[in-house]
Image 1 (cartoon, rainbow, N blue to C red):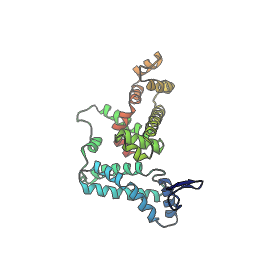
Image 2: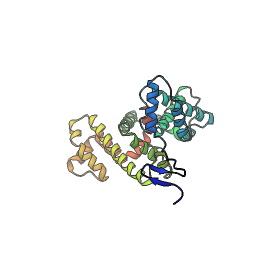
Image 3: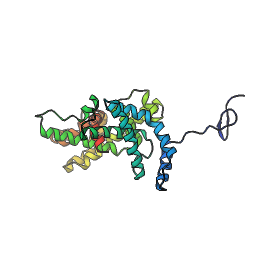
Image 4: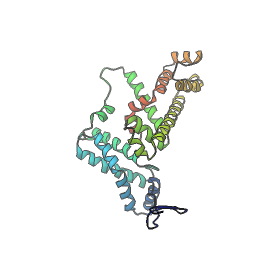
Length: 274
């Protein structure tokens, strides 16, 4: 049989040359950390990471900024900040792309708030727009607290879960684009997104109970989570009465019913809490 052949040593092309899979982002990060620890910089690794992710990072930057040069500057800044984070012992551990895209948005908002010269696109500008003048200050404070609670819950999730939630909910990327970004099949994206949403719901409920002002709220924690999963009226008179009298838990229940929307609304808080 001609063409490529399979042996116990792995796949081969014509001429018996084995096919070597490209190194993962995790492998490259380990190499980069080792080089930084030795006082050097593995430029080959930096170049490979840059080439691998630049197109996606640039697309994200263009979606944030109206001026093309600002987008190019954002790309350079995002890679520089990420390399510096790795040098200091922080930064991405697995996939670089979700981390880089987050840095792009955070930096764009930071530049806009700083010198005001960076002009954001309408969608990104809307994330940072203050509430209408004359609104209820207490309601605005509660909304802000809700967004921060969602942000803190989001950041407790594994990187893979954060990536799929960000791309499918906040970015609302097209269906065929997310599998390419994450390197998995469309069906795997669906499964991963389901697990990630459940993880976010659990994390939010845990954070809510920790911050609960009343011991009775903690007693209803499991029932609150179960009611949110059923997406119907709370079962049991005790929980229903508690939600009628406790504004803290009733707001949490509303957030649990639609954490997708809560995460989209709290995108700016997610970036600020990085």
